[in-house]
Image (cartoon, rainbow, N blue to C red; front, side, top):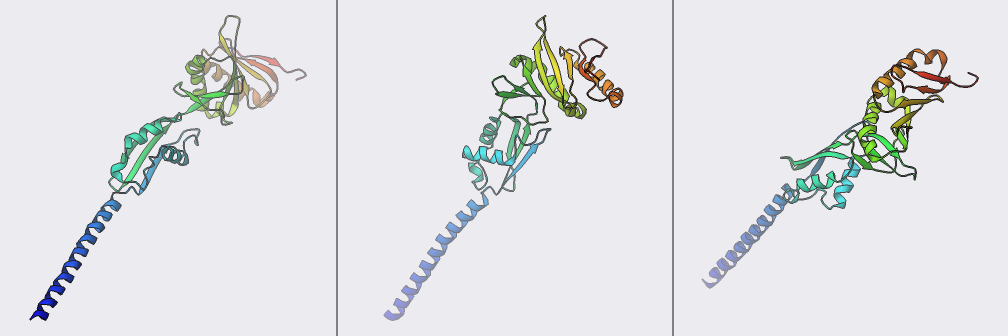
Length: 256
């Protein structure tokens, strides 16, 4: 009787220990499973492209967020602040707008709209800055070769208010974006800002005059290019003056 009772007690103890171990295991397993289910498993990034891709790319975005210690991939979804991600990315001058949100399948989605630099202002000391299509200054020291560069006597106010308009017009038009390389800004005897254009093709200088009616002036020049240049060539004139309303005044190159 004592032996049988002892076996019963031992068996009950083993069963109790097994059940307790199973309960503990189940609790930890469930907790681990819940944690795994709550982990961000992917960052979906959509960058709206413009004429100058590369200022913002996935590597740059990841580096910004990792530096701020808020890169979401692998983190618990509850610990991820989409507002912090938006705020950090918005600090980059080339980001115009950013939206971040969580999806039902444990992903973080980020939509970025880039600013569009339209002209690069190169200062006399070699430093410079971009101006975007909205007239915003973007500090940077290099520029892509297919973007017009402005040099000379340029205030930030003039760059933001006027050169941004002309730069946007140029890069939005494939013909002019392929033709215009540099803008040289100076002032005339009346203190007005005037612009000389250095084309990518040919040896001449195009005198735009003031920025007033620049679209009409460039329209006249394009007509001249399309009708006259095929016959006379690109190097016929040293200057092409568009400053006077409805006229194009050309100065011939010597011995041409």
